[in-house]
Length: 249
Image: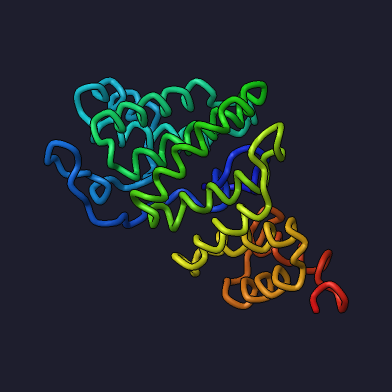
């Protein structure tokens, strides 16, 4: 999930599109095996491939998963902020078809949350209406397959609670954000986007000293990065802004 952290979606940015090893399969309803370990998440692909898999989504749950993952890749490649809305909706439909085939697939629920977030990002007028869907599907994924996409479900929930407006407008809650980012860091501490999100959520919850500790840990653990949108650049920026002699102690 490339790019900077975004205002509505949870973890729709922060990790490069790549192959990830997924958790072991578990039995699905009816005895069929949930294929979470068979699908290479966010593998490079084309729009034509996504369309072909989507055409088989109703009868083939694995094709539905591949279509959803591929549509996410296609949408993320769009340079225009509003680009890829149609593909995001197609991907969400494919993920929902996968859930029909495999109700216990954490990957399917995660992709449903992910693509709903991409849709919300590209159709801002509907963003707040889609937040409950993102929250529901990410929470389900966190139960069924918490390690998918390097603790993606908890990272997504952390980002959602961090960025969304607070009650009564939406679900924003800095304490919930901290809880979910802590879970993500505990599960996959090597993922820099998990620790960066934890630091940001701690800052939002006015826990500056803890946030500064997380930022310093992050910067000692990651390799130097270039570019203003890198995790390292963002961490250094936050450290300089919030963690001076007073803020960091």
